[in-house]
Image (cartoon, rainbow, N blue to C red; front, side):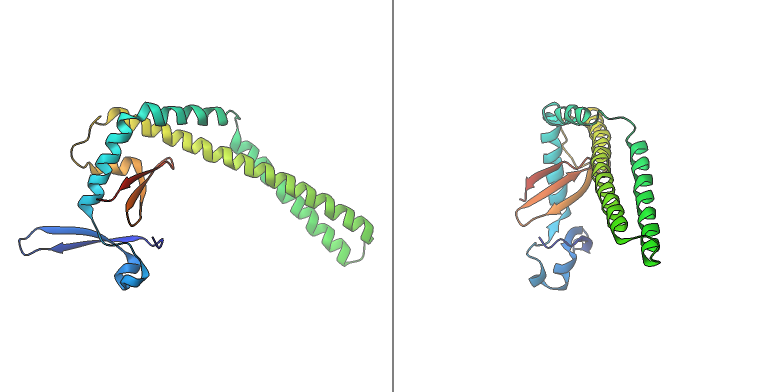
Length: 199
């Protein structure tokens, strides 16, 4: 796996049948750049069917507990308001630092006072940045919670057992596919990653 994206290619066979494959962008240049071989679109579709059926039958065991866990982590309300307040405080501290540097460069304050104020600003900035990261984490968890609830809805209203590939279902729940030499990793819209063996 080289980390490059895959390109979709269509090739018409002599029989008139369209053969669709996906190839690593780097491998197209030369095989030495990527060890992943070409993969047929039908293989991706079959792997999705298997993944859907597994998760559909274990939705209550996997996704529902994940929602409960995220809801407990997400107990703090008004995350966006807290982030805005922290951003405002961070900007205020940066502005104070600029003023302090300006005063020091003009020799309007002594070095001891300058160092004391610089240390205080640095301490405040660290505290605000740490708090901001915690709220950003909660914000990401909130987004993951909403996406996981939406995933559950898709599985509840979709077929319990999928027999043929459904493009609409695929687009509704899959964010991307990571291709490894022997496996396909489906990253769902909520960030959950599920692995299927390549056949």
